[in-house]
Length: 319
Image 1 (spheres, rainbow, N blue to C red):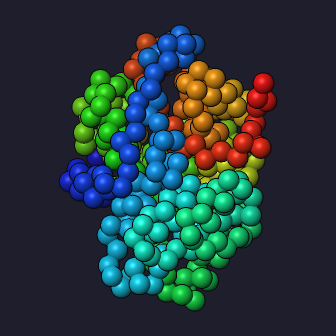
Image 2 (cartoon, rainbow, N blue to C red):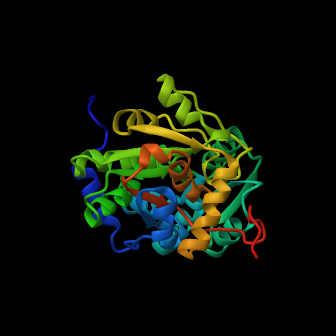
């Protein structure tokens, strides 16, 4: 294995820095979902996290590392919602100005939350190029410090603390499954498994309609792609240049699920766990249900990445 860019001590230090700012989220279980899947499932509920998603881990970690000069110029990022919310909250607590560039098709509940935390919002066209270009223009104008949503080692170290907690709380897990968009959480999970577990495998979960990580993983050729098609809005971005090599080294596989499988899994989580989760959160359960033979009798941790849902735009009918 090549030398990894993030060490065991890096993750330990990140966890120490952010502990006073985050929740140690619980692991929930369901006998019904165990019976349906044929596996023993443990759901890591980052939908209960500060700002409603795991992104708080990375955002608070970056804020803890900024110099006084960087804080004085403010922070900026581009985000479809959860990273933007997390950075807005972390910046607000630190007394730092924040600007969030958001695609025009971001869920209204996420736009409203970013406003609530006091950040300035700039809307742009819903493409990766537009997000990055708009962000660059504003950075040039203000000198704000960029806090990338996923492709940053500080962010990845922060996200790694989620899987670290899983390993500490339930060390006998055979597999951990995390959704993958930009790859910050999946890369961090792979690193945590490498440094803190002797045997736990880490697998990514991705929509068929946004499967650039799965294709890149199988071919070995980095081929990121932004997709508007999938209902899982949190993973529409392409996998990152920094995250992908870590995923290659530290993860076992990346599996995909169809749109129907994602929506069905989301509805099952709402109905059986009685909690609110986003469509992207349903990806781990969707791939487990789609691959029953592979996961039969396995002890599996599934990261539920966030709960910032627009209740007027649910992909299933509430009865």
